[in-house]
Length: 386
Ligand SMILES: CC(C)(COP(=O)(O)OP(=O)(O)OC[C@H]1O[C@@H](n2cnc3c(N)ncnc32)[C@H](O)[C@@H]1OP(=O)(O)O)[C@@H](O)C(=O)NCCC(=O)NCCS
Image (cartoon, rainbow, N blue to C red):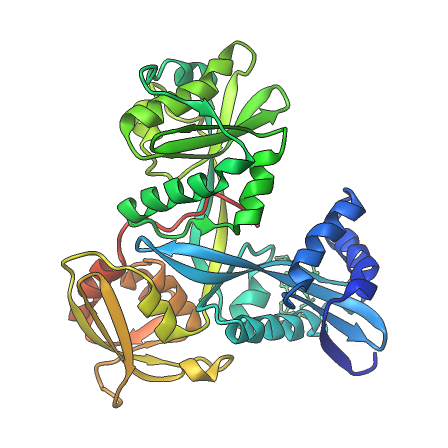
């Protein structure tokens, strides 16, 4: 092994990345299609690789996502496709690569980064922590068919509706003060909507995209701004009940559908947890929303060895649904957090959990309930994998 170098992935590396990915994820697929997607990450240097001499031995890419936090959109670097060639594993190559990914997220101005971990150890070492889940539920198609809503106009949608879909999702997430859901780049929404395997329908204040999954149906995403629209869109999917017995759907555990269907979703719902990391702590706080009417003044001591700009004594002020984080004098009452505790707190994990896991210390114990109120709200979730 010569000295390893982190580089931007370029055209000449793509075949090697494909090989390492195949050895890592066991996936086949269409190499040309994969290359097309890969190039969209190369355009502005969001695909990193590790070279040993001329040989590419590891790679990772960053999605230019945004994420809803407290009903406001915060730019988030979505890390995906982290792979190390089998013969290079267990020697720190993954850590070298992820450290570069983290610094690239900072350089590109993402206050947050998130990922779905296949193994947590690598990412925890770098300050990521569990923040939320993606939940998959299985409903009886017949239950959805009878939900009603037939008075609501629903029309077929397509590629030209991408802006409308983004706008409807934004309205719903702002109103609900959502935590966690992704905002995809418009080009991705367009290609999602033009895919002939996806069936998209839109109403005045909502939309659904669903598809066949073998002989059953699967909802990709359903957004509804009112009860009537929710009934109409779910019933549109359920209208396939003569063929499909079940409908799988990724939705929040507190989605209104759970309170509307006659039978609860099948017992074995599945969840996939994602991790979060704050890259630029003041920007991450300034960018997100907080519950109205909650006021907080608190001192924080943050220690972040990987991203030292975050390290220091800070004062957090929250009021009128917004926060500011300013540098402060050291305080004996400061709540002490590392990047993992900070990520979990930001995502609404109760202080008692953080203290119980050793991820938060110090601070005035009486302030815990105020911090819980500030960072509380709907549990963080995502509807999509990436
Ligand atoms: C996961 C993967 C990227 C790790 O790369 P790597 O170069 O072996 O990682 P490192 O050597 O830098 O290890 C960093 C830490 O993670 C730990 N680690 C690495 N792989 C692990 C695994 N599969 N299970 C548990 N811990 C693991 C290491 O032990 C090390 O921790 P330590 O310092 O406390 O011992 C690599 O094994 C891989 O490509 N796997 C297949 C694809 C995959 O799962 N990618 C992740 C997608 S999210």
